[in-house]
Structures are given as C-alpha cells and as structure tokens.
Image (cartoon, rainbow, N blue to C red; front, side, top):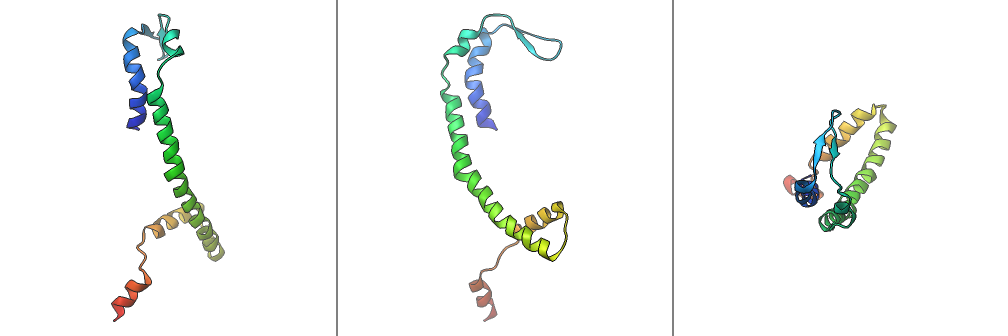
Length: 114
C-alpha cells in the first residue's frame, strides 16, 4: 500500500535526522534523546487524508462489492446444498468459477438463431 507508506514517511522522514537512537539486541530500537515534543503537536494532515480516503473507499466501493457478493453467494450456496453435499472449499471454488463464466443475454442468443 504505497499511499500508506507515503503518508507515514511524510512525517518520519523529517523526524529521523533529529532522533538519536541505537539498535537493541532484541531487534528493536532505543531512543536516546527526548523526542516527546516531536509527537505532541504535529501536522497529521497527510495521515488524516489517507485515513479519509481509505474510509471513503471502504464505504463507496468495498462494502457495496461485499454486499453484492453475499447477496449472490448465500442463495447460490443454499441452492447447491439442496442438490448435493459439497465441502465449503469446493463450493467456494465452484462459485468463483461460475462467476467468471460469460452470461449470454436473451437478445444475443435469439439473434444467433436466425
């Protein structure tokens, strides 16, 4: 997620030159100078903009896609399970396969019969 990295680096890249630190034996870092003021009042605009864009994408794109999926998958599952017993993983694979198949419109099929 490139946008997330850029939002974080917009602040940390300016901060790193003034933070004195050393690596610890357990793979962490220990800050050697007082850095509290750097975090107390900082401009979080890039981070806020990233968060806003992420929430907006979730509301406008991800949730509607997930809702469409669930509205189509649940009846599909019930219908298949009424016909045959099938492991969940196989049912998921079948649903994915069927979802990728082209669906011919009634007008397209009738025009090829003439």
